[in-house]
Each structure stands twice: as C-alpha cells, then as structure tokens.
Length: 444
Image (cartoon, rainbow, N blue to C red; front, side, top):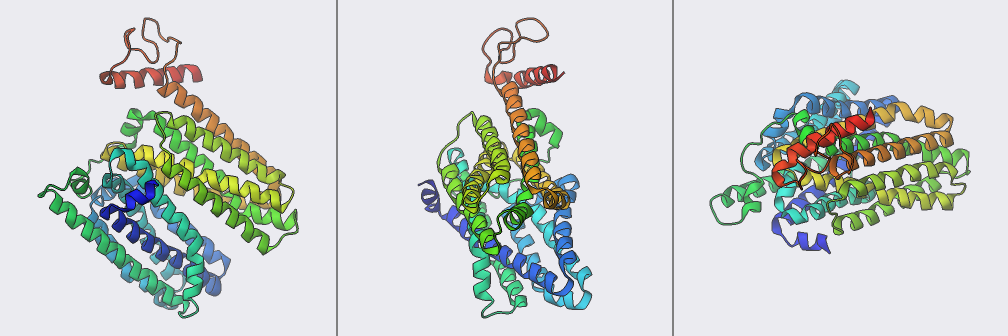
C-alpha cells in the first residue's frame, strides 16, 4: 500500500504525525469555540465565527501573495505556529474580558495564519517525495483530515470528561508547539541537506525563496487548471446544501431525528475514507482532467439523488457514494498541482484555497434558506448545476489538451499540430495559444 511505503520515510512520517496532532487540535478548537459561542451569545455568534474566519483567506488570496511566498520555508512556518500558541490559549480570557469582539479578533488572527500556512505547506509537501509519489502523499495528507473529522469530536468528548471547555483551548495550543517543533526539525535537516549528500528531496523543502507569479501568468500557461479550480468552486458551493439539506429531508420527509442524521453523516464519512484509499493508491495518468470531470458529474448526480431518496436506507447509500467521490476529485486536482514547478504550484494552491473558502462562505450565506423552503427542488437544481459545470469543464479540457482534426484560421496549423507536423516539447506554448483560440472560436 502506497501510504505505508511513504510512512517508512522519516521525513514523511514526522510531518504526517505533526499534521495529525495539529488537525486534532483544530477539531478541539472548532468544537470548543462553537460551544462557547452558543453558550454565551447564541447562534448569531456562531455565524459570525464562520464569516470572520473566512475573510482572511479572501484578503490574503487577493493581496498577500508575497506573504504566502515568504512562508514557504519550514522554519518560517514554525514561527507562525508558535505565534498562535498564545492567541489560542487566551480565547477564554478574551471572551470574558471583551465578549464577542475579543473572540472575533482571535478568529481573524487564526484565520490569517491558516490563509498563509495552508497554501505554503501544500506547496512544500510534494517536495518530500519523488514526482511519481506526489499523488500518494497528497492522499495521505487528505486522509489525516478525514480521520480527524471522524475521531476529533469523540476525542474532544473524552477530554471533556476530565477537562473544562477552556482546557480544550490549552490542548489545542499545545498542538501548535508539536507542529512547530516538527517544522523546525525538518527545516534544520533540509538545511543540512544542502551541505551533505542527502538527496534533492531532502534539501528542496526548505531551500530558496519562491518567485511570486501572477494568477494570470499561471493560468495562461496551464489554462485547464483555471477550469478545474472553477469547477471545484462551483461544486463546493452547491455541496454546502448538504450541511442543512440532509437534516431538513430527514425531519420533514422521513420522520427521522438526530439519530438518522448521525447515520447519514457517518455513511458519508465512511465513503470518504473508501474514496481516499482508492484515490491515494491508484495512479492517474495524463487523462486526469477527464477523470476529474467524471467525478464531479458523479457528485452532481449524487447531490440530485438526495432529493429522490425516499427512505433512510436509500439516503445512506447515496451518502456513501457522495462521500466516496469527494476525496477523489480533491486528491486528483491537488496532486496535479503538486507536480507543477514550485512557483506555479504556490500560486495555484493559493488560488484554490481562496476560491474554495469564498465558495463555502457564499454557500453558507445563500443556500440554507433556499434548501429549508424547498429541499428537494434545491437538491435537484444544485445537482444539475454541478453536473453542467463538469460537462463544460470536460469540453474545455478536450479543447485545451487534446488534438483535434478541425483547423482554425487557415493553413496547416490544426489544434494539436504545429506547421503540419507532430509537436515537440518546445512547441507547448504555441499549442496552448492555438487551443485557447480554438476554445474561443467554438464558444463564439
């Protein structure tokens, strides 16, 4: 199994253990903060927490490219982790002293740190392994998040039998120290690697400043990535309907209560683990875009299927399918970004992170009210919208990456050929320009 082979590498194992501890801490923080907000200020405060946490991702994504590029050094990531220790540990005191305003400041600071470290760390992880193992290490990181989403609440509940809610914030603060120590150790070994013969992958994770590229430059060079990230943005926006819609369906259409909701969530989580194991251990070749679009077509159909599932049993089946497809698309796209040059990789991960947070924020603002009014219609419409977006992206991928027998603008220059001959590697830029013109011509 690819994951077990990866964990035999010390650097991968160290990073994975640190990220697992950190992810558990994040779950503790989320649970403790949600409970504190509900207990002291009600549902309005919970909604504000979601909004304030997402805003830094939009701001950093739009204006903080140089800050994110600065953070693509392991030792600098360690500094950011240490800086969050005091912030997180002070949450209970700040709430008592300043109320909602104090806690919003904390959330903004933590959100800013996440907005910087998330794309920076995603950029560094592929450098830990050879190129043919990037998909596997991407799946391993994805698996960490999925496991902690399942086990995190239960672990927090167990801790709450011996700790108070403020104690969970102290535990979360300690997890930042663990990840900071791991980053410092990995960064030190990478620095030593530039002096000793430990291989390129050992040294590359903490070497050199990363060039800041514009999104326009990167998308012009890899146009299909723009379509793929756009599809993920649309799909995740539509998928936000599940946060409220499943509960509405269970209570209004099936007379099932909290127990039924727990079963559906568990089914989706189990499907997610299954999908992760498949996507992380089966290599995807050059036709990744077609697979990626097929996954989103399946997710759109599954979203619509929630509307017609007339029983809890059928809803559980749909939940497993929807859950299994979710990690496949994510791992395929992130692995493809991961094999890009580091500067392009950083920009693509930043764009992706910004777009997905914007989609989730918009989805949570717009969709709950619509789904509550007409849950079945909402699921059908959102599923159709997701499927349509996937079909359009599939068409774009065929135009931008695949040879076509149709010629444009005269002469021997067909899409997929240069001056009537088979293309060479040096002709890549010419082919991209031809394909872009072809796509514009067909769209017109």
